[in-house]
Image (cartoon, rainbow, N blue to C red; front, side):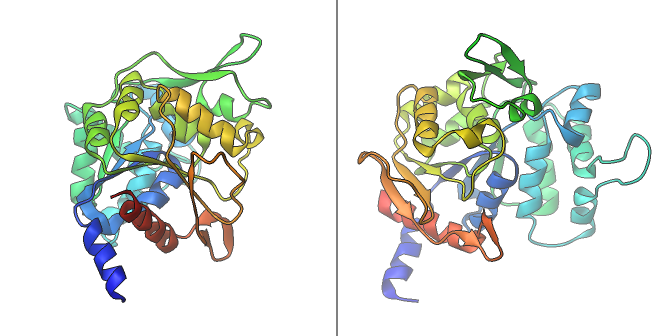
Length: 305
């Protein structure tokens, strides 16, 4: 390791990194940054209404747990009986078919705890997960869209199936952001948006008024992490610059400062700083390589100091 690399590593010690998103994308980012421990905070989307988590919400209410479970799964470093139980998915016939036991555990702990965040912290402690994981809100809500003809579409699964880009998205009903999420944004040195499904993972947290306000006034540099391949659904009909404009609108006019992507990044206006790195995972061009992604974010942290 060169003296420059050693110095860069020292410069990153204690830097606070916030990553916003959901699902596989946020889990990938958090696992790439796991060596930074509790200095990393993932703010997780809680509006999913599909799959196991959607079924739990339909019969038990509450926030969506699937994205949080996914992030915790990708942060488990020590295999154990606890981690095997948490990752177990039921197969066969009957009501349990398709349910992930981690979702059920989080929901059970949510029922036993005062706050959903308490349930997350209990699981983190049990599985020795150091990075902070905070739900965007602790109140049940759904993602909704307004089409250009005025039609309203409710639910992430329905929005994913749209064949046109909506006019706008909103959270229904309006709910407050988690205080810890807002505080993390205020204290951050770098804020990462994505990677992941743009409309259903990256956008929902930004749509909460307290989150948008905190991002607008944040002293940290805001980084948009571009996906490596086009999405399915309406987000696949958007170009990168349109996505950045949507983020800017949600953040009260605050622009993204840096865009991180691979060599296929399109040209963007000069007011964006571009970081183009070799990010695809070997054998899976659509998936970010954890090590390369972590190195790229550390470069950005040094650049932003």
